[in-house]
Image 1 (spheres, rainbow, N blue to C red):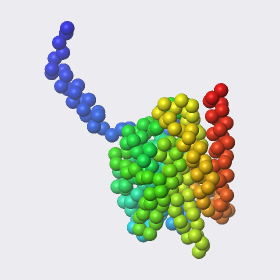
Image 2 (image 1 turned 45 degrees about the vertical axis):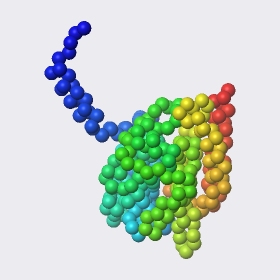
Image 3 (image 1 turned 120 degrees about the vertical axis):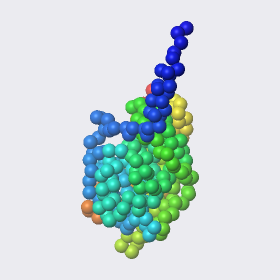
Image 4 (image 1 turned 90 degrees about the vertical axis):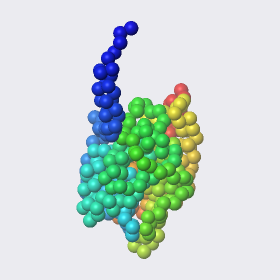
Amino acid sequence: MKRTSTARIVPLLTLLAAALALPAAPVAAASGDPPEWTQPRAPLHLLGPITYVGSRGLGAYLIRTSAGAILVDATMDENVPAIERNIRSLGLKLNDVKLILVSHAHFDHVGGLERMRRDTGARVLAGRGDVAALRTGTPPGETSYGVRRFAPVARVTGVADGERVTLGDVSLRAVTTAGHTPGCTSWVMRVTDRGRPREVVFAGSMTVAGNRLVNNRRYATIVRDYRATFARMERLRADVVLPMHPEAADVFGRARSGTLVAPRLLGDMARAARVDFERTLREETR
């Protein structure tokens, strides 16, 4: 057997160690992604302390509190500079963002999360079922479009269903809405709008969106979880629905027309998602 010189091995090991020490490269937007996902838009005040700071197609919401700000979702890595500009344009510094709340561990919602975490120094909170995915940068479950990885999140804290997260004078409740991912979470808060209390739901995704429903080896309870989420979302009180894909609730149109308050909307969205889910499940079981 041919012997390999130790002098040749050492430089190779040095190069390998250096490569492993580098941070994971962000996943670039694929050519098939909707263009509006990475199209910037100006901040849009919605109600109370809530301002939309995301792109045209991916939701990111900034909540001002008496002790700093909370960001709900960071979207894709390509969007981070625009989101940060939006935050600064509101008169805030990046380190005013103290908490980042996660909806679910898919690349379009957390691709920029680690970068945003480093830039702001904020604490990241996510549903427990998605923590492992966030730490590894590998989305949970199997899909029809393969695996779209994202930069691993160095520090993330898991939250349980019903757990409250408080910063200053603002408190949000985590509501597990699994199915889209095992840890998909909706965040609920109360806002005073024109002197009236409103329940605002930052709604986690309920769509199938390429998830494999039958024989999903990495997410065996996916069908049961989806159905439980539909039932829960149909019952959940929501005066205002703010989803992670804004077009799902016509957030911009409703904000312009002053019709964000829509108490039946979340139930309607859940019922429509259930119909699509059951149709997809039937197709997969044929």
